[in-house]
Length: 232
Image (cartoon, rainbow, N blue to C red):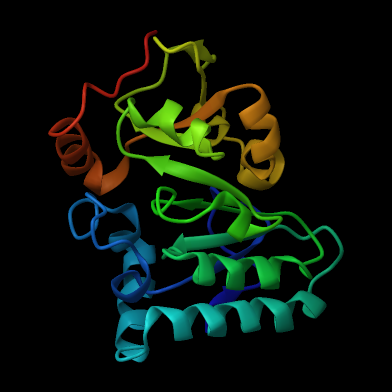
């Protein structure tokens, strides 16, 4: 229902993935919800629409328990080292819900990683061993996320032409997503699998807005923040 053991997502690569309905699980105050969210377009968007129809009427806590249970049960079906990408769609917006993800991740036989827009409301500790990055909506939030104990991720308008890391005005290392700059899958890159390393380096992973929602996404983000660009 939630877990796909072998995702056909070319960006993720050979990994398992979970999908949850946005309506019931994502923060209601997310600026991109119903307004340029990548998970509400394309193939992922079709999956999300199906989940929202099938799970209509179920609350976020119930869905988190169900997702945690399914991860726990399906962990025995995958080989040692098989990675899991939590929430290609969806999120965990409370400590209780994040703890359900941590419960499943604790028995998963490989690395587990995710991104969350609810990092202000959910303690990093609630995610347990999950490598979880804070989805920041402006450049000014990157340092704030680090101070809250999260490695940050940020959508930018473009990457440097050479695809190399730079430093922002706060001295934080901005690392362009290798999937976008070098066509390397998440399963081969593994940077987001080690949030502790990113925090230690005061580093942020940047993702260039792309696809059918690119213009809308950038308009939304730039409407309430300083320009989200990375110096070339």
